[in-house]
Image 1 (spheres, one colour):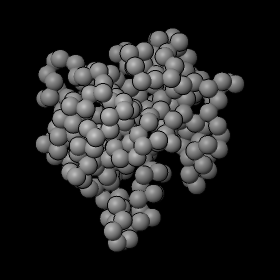
Image 2 (cartoon, rainbow, N blue to C red; image 1 turned 180 degrees about the vertical axis):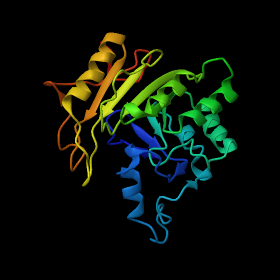
Image 3 (tube, rainbow, N blue to C red; image 1 turned 30 degrees about the horizontal axis):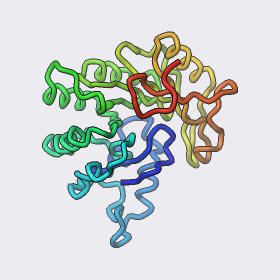
Length: 249
């Protein structure tokens, strides 16, 4: 686990799985893959096997040992719903989240149909715990099916990560969505993000009463362009969140 995360919308990261595979254009310049592959072959390093999918059962109970409440980003270095992660293992991750319920967990996936299926099997038609936030990542308007899968899943809190935003998303389906994060791409091959795309999402969130968090403009480094949109920072969290800075206005 990594405490004091540099990711603006969370406090800590927890990675019971690491490694993944690219499935859409938003993955092309994946920061996690770039970081992990630097250490491939380094004996004894946690990423000795690079970005190959790796289950890490020794990490499963880590949140239970953190007594101070935190927002915890689950699998910042992977996708919990990768097709090769067994349902039994995903269930053990959820067991821990349900037991250590003084934290808030942010579970983010691009494998939206697999998450929807798992949540339906686990919770049926009853919404899951509200301290477990389930979200999907989209990068442009071609991936809106992920949002619809999320809306059909019995999640206690639903959110969207629109990062890296590499194209206009158009009209976002925001019914039952509590939170939207937007960010530009960072790294040596960062693709530019246009202001009208960001403004459109912000305005849609405001009209729908959905919390809006603007993470970064991106660039060579994550902080290159700053966090201000039209002269101000947006750091909203879902209204139901007891561990947050600013609720939706």
